[in-house]
Length: 388
Ligand SMILES: [Zn+2]
Image (tube, rainbow, N blue to C red; front, side):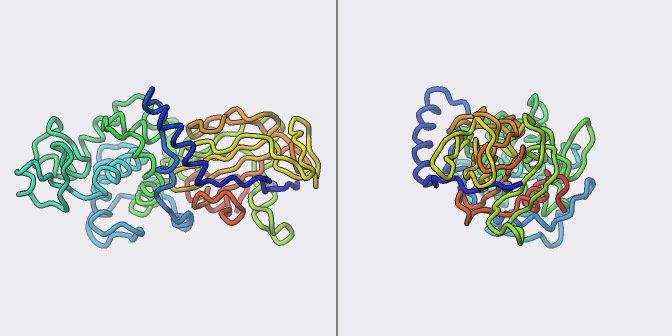
């Protein structure tokens, strides 16, 4: 199968993000639902390949003593606090998705530091890792007085237990977007801020607990590297379609092929690989500037047909090309991981029905930002089938 992978018009993401954020700010203040800012989504710069070599085991017990793994920008105290949070989750038999949500929440609330509060004098007499000043909140999760005594809330294990107790009572928490699950527990004034930490939280959980962010819970069973057909790995990712990878990323005979081709029958549902914000959803012009995406294309026609770009936490962008008809989503829309955004087709520069799938890092939609989707998706617990 062949296709042209470069959409012709490269939008400047920065200006697009600014425009969308302005729009969303308006939406946010009238309704509040789904506000999930682009600037925050991309704010946590990440090395996409950090997890690639991490094995996944379903039953790794976290270790809270001894040496901590290294994660750029986070120190040993922060990693040890994350390990304590995960350990409580393991003791309470909360699935790894809950550990990711808890670590992301503590990243937002305290940067994973056990904070005292300068307006709560008792808190400053308790060993702490910094001083905050938000209301009467203290500790890793910035819990207020109704959550327990000052000493209790500044005990990481107690604070984590209280968080999980509330989380597991939220209906559907295991599959809802991280920001919604975290907000249901924390009731924060800034609910969207949790989402931006999802990727680094997944990396921390995997580093501390044997690749646990790659675990998917389905039918009460936890399995590594199996998130597909709408099931979501603890990392928040799922495979976009069930088929196997044919033509690969930047192969010797196709060095400019910036994604992978996954063969599938026309009409197969394409699911967005992680929660995010739609950046593009339109018909890509062909080599002659035509916008004829409702018919099957051909090799050398040019363009990626009906396509969608989505921005995710950690600054990753996913691209879905050659859809059979107009995408089911619109620019600016928040899409939850696993939701169907269109169907497989052969529009644009394509010789037969397939999904051309790309992953980009650092919010860079150009070919420079493209990374190999195969190791990336494996590292997120949502491997593409038939990919070695
Ligand atoms: Zn392709």
